[in-house]
Amino acid sequence: MRLILLGPPGAGKGTQAQRLVSRYGIVQLSTGDMLRAAVKAGTTVGKAAGAIMDRGELVPDDIMMQVISERLDQADTTNGFVLDGFPRTVAQAEGLDRLLADKRLDLDAVVELVVDEEALLARIEGRARENAGAVRADDNAETLKKRLAVYRQQTAPVAAYYRSTGQLQTVDGMLPIDEVSRQIDGLLAGAGREEFHQASG
Ligand code: AP5
Image 1 (cartoon, rainbow, N blue to C red):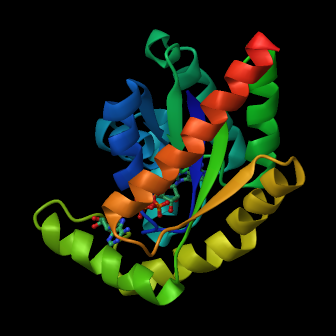
Image 2 (cartoon, helix red, strand yellow; image 1 turned 180 degrees about the horizontal axis):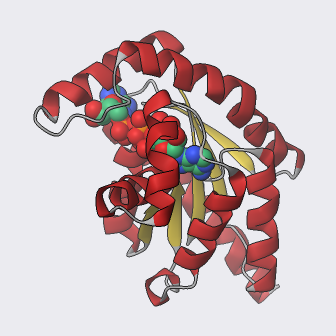
Image 3 (cartoon, rainbow, N blue to C red; image 1 turned 180 degrees about the vertical axis):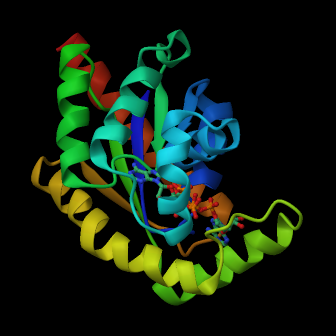
């Protein structure tokens, strides 16, 4: 199972990705988590990314392609993966297509979590309260505003990209967490059946 979860900050990508990991035995590839680990470790990527992330802007595409390309080369991705936070620009989506084509791999699903903008701030504030002590520098009302503007300008076109390739499926991310999971499961069961028909047909 190889899939992408799309959606604005606070849409529930990380929450749903973690559930998919335990359900399908795949790995979660969260570029946000990878970058935060790089910042903490003080790597070259981390040094380049830290201030950009704190401002709520996007880390440049060439850095992100390098990060994801190296991650996809690791053996634990062989059983499948869920991409959470990547691709975030059309250039990244095109780069991912090239990477997967080189590896002769296909995506099984691209799922967009659709959430009202008004709900996002409440969710991000809720997460910050839950993680008191380890609050992300970008989880505040001001930076969220910037992250949403960046999402509208640079990441919303990624959904349009996958719509144009016929791969995009949407789920109502305003539903309770368990119901969102059930709906994603339903879409993935459909993707599995399609693969089976292709293999047997
Ligand atoms: P990243 O870490 O990817 O942040 P994000 O996309 O803004 O996503 P979040 O982690 O804020 O939200 P989420 O959708 O995962 O929601 P969650 O499940 O936690 O990126 C951070 C930064 O890194 C970026 O700004 C950028 O600078 C950089 N970056 C990363 N990737 C990049 C890339 N590819 N290119 C360039 N730069 C990149 O849920 C949020 C809260 O809501 C939780 O408390 C949860 O319990 C709750 N919740 C979830 N679902 C529901 C529900 N259905 N109902 C009620 N509550 C819910």
